[in-house]
Length: 379
Image 1 (cartoon, helix red, strand yellow):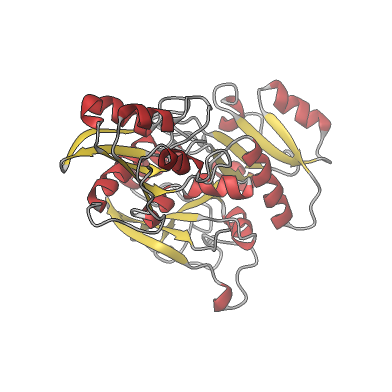
Image 2 (spheres, helix red, strand yellow):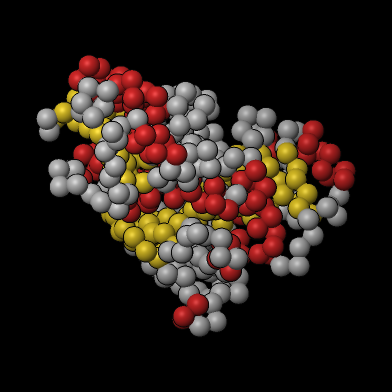
């Protein structure tokens, strides 16, 4: 007879430290597993870890399968800690619930249930029906924090948006003349490149392209090759820009208005640029919503918005920012004409200002990295 354990009960002999270790393992797959979620798993027998693993790449074995294989015969009767509910359907890999049952694991402890429609509690139910005790909710808040981008895409059809910028103590992106190289030191810039190397896309406005002629690649390369996206209503991007010249090596998408020059579009497409006409919108928020939905349809999970000031302001006004990563340099530029980090209309009252939760402040070289998430209710 199956031993049923309520979803909201954590048994006394469940040790969160093992789930915490599984969560740290899960992060090893960041940038390599999307659009799948990051997942980690450990097999524990007599208080000792006898097998562990994480989802290492999209299409590869899932975390619990790897952990159970590494545990081998020691998995018999052991506890399996897994950050996300084991799948019970055939996708790119067989059902993980089958591997759990074959292993003879004595109990399964889950961080949180998988909202994917073909799982959504059915994996836990399958194990319970086979007589395996299942406990759901061990370090659930931490597990859900890890899978937030995955869950947002499932819930809304849009990728997770990370707004990133570097600024001075007085909130400036550059001097009034446009000089911004370099506000931050090499350590901060290296970390920003690591972020570029794990996202699906990096977005800037045409103003940034015309001012800085950026390349927008991760150096050195990361686990993902991010597409570069330029918001350019009138296709003003120079054909000799670094972005266009590298378009055959690294994807470049230019989002433009349908009224833009067909000849200009043809010239860009001949150089390997993907030109995408956005529907005419009455407000930037509508255009951003369309763009994010379009990117979600490409199975994108993470989008990095690098600016400039007006683009960041438009995303803020549209309520489209999920996470912020800011590099703060110990210098002050001053000057009313020097661009601030966030443009656009801004909040009319303090109660309308964006506030962040889970804020982290980390020293990095001579600078600081500030990272936080926008707190929103989830459906």
